[in-house]
Every structure is written in C-alpha cells, then in structure tokens.
Length: 237
Image (cartoon, rainbow, N blue to C red; front, side, top):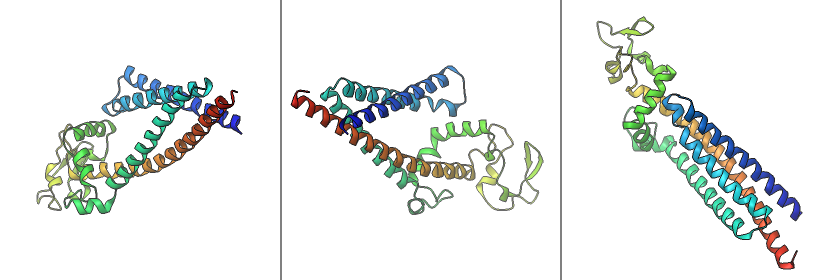
C-alpha cells in the first residue's frame, strides 16, 4: 500500500506536469500568432497556470523520487494554499453571480446582476476590451434591440420610424449605423454579455469544485507519501 501511494502520487504529478507544458505551449502559440484582443487575454492566464503547474509538479516529483522531506513539505504547503484559494474564489463566484444579490444591489436595466459584475465588466476600460471581442464575433450587439421597432433597410443599415421608436428606451436612441458604434454601448448589449458571463461563471464554479476535490485527493496522497518517507528514514530503510 505505501508503495502504491508513492506510484500514484508520481503518476498524478506527471499528468499535471504535462498539463503545465501544454498550457505554456498554448500561451506561446497565442503570443507568436497575431489574434484578436479576446485571444490575447488568454495569454497571461495560460502562462501563469502553466508555470505554476510546472513548478509545483516538479517539487512533488523531486520530493517523492529523491525522498526529500523538506521539498514535500513545500509542495504540500503550496497545495494547501491553492485549495484554500480555489475554495475562496468559488465562493466569490457564487456570490457575484447570485441573482438575489444583484436585485438587492442595483435597480437599473442590469438589475439582475451584482454591482461587482456591472462595475468590473460593463463599465470603463474592461467593457472596451469586451466590446472589441463582440465586434470580432459579429454578435447580436451589432443590431438594435427588437423591441425598438427600427426598420431594417439592409444588412448593415437601420432607420428610425417616423413616429419614433416603439418604446421609450435609451437603447433605441443610442443605436447608430456607424459600424464602430452600433449598439455596443447599449444596456441590452451589456446585459446579454453579463448573462453569458453569469452562466459561464456558474459552470466555472462547478468545474472548480471538481478541481478542488482532485487537489484534495492529491494532497492526501502527498501526505501519505511524506509519512512513508519519514517512516522509512526512521527505520533506516
């Protein structure tokens, strides 16, 4: 059983080491190939994640293979901090994507979303970056909201009815046929983006829960490996 835990520990860290190399390679690929602003935003997270996996996995492998107790102590400490950090982040994601929190905090068009999501993603510099991504994707923000009742002349041009928009809404007046403006700054556009982000972050929370469970298993096996090494050293094995 002790030797099985050691073998399992080494195998799991070899897998995470391979994942680290893959993440660094993907980051380098994005860096070397010109892409959209959206693709560029993946570069740094991939690099940081890849380097983290490489360093931590190397610590675990060297500590287990060379039977070095202090390296395993560092490895387990980093793993514990990572687990606690992921738990805190998952709780944060659940809070900021909670509809009840959004309704209590905000009373505007985007009231279904928390103030943090609105302030962090729908305003200022961050929205400009998201907007460039939407332009690249030719999203629904390229046309006026349906409820405005604007008349479509062709694929890229809409006109306001003589009696004005069908409803009194700021988004109807904000829409422009200018291809650089369109409806990217409309609340309906921002609301649609936040709806997608909310759904994706909820899925991320589920994924994080799975990752946390996986890390806890590795942490537990690592503790067993360290215990085995200390026992072997004690009996002079």
